[in-house]
Amino acid sequence: MSDVESLQSAEEIEAAITELEKSRERIVNDLFQMAKRVEWSKKVALEHIGQNPEIVRIDATIEELQAKQASLQSPSKA
Image (cartoon, rainbow, N blue to C red; front, side):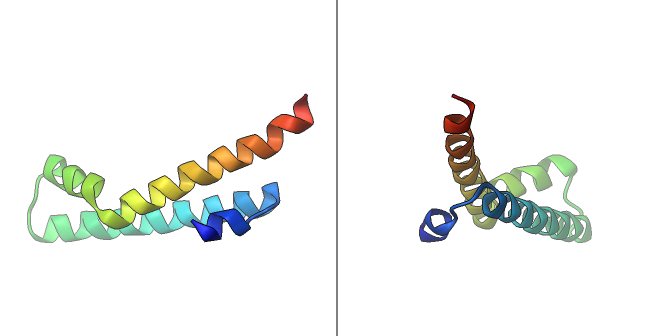
């Protein structure tokens, strides 16, 4: 992802991760509210949330950012 590659500092990466986590939480909450309206069980709702393309994309981006963050931090510890 080019957006991930453009982030250089640990602070920028941390801010991006925080924003993505907030977005993910909003989406999950919205999906739970929709699930309640259509009377899905919690189990069914969780299955749908786990398969939501937006959630999958956000999770993948967070993992990528965390890996980049770890690689930035490891040289300074050596």
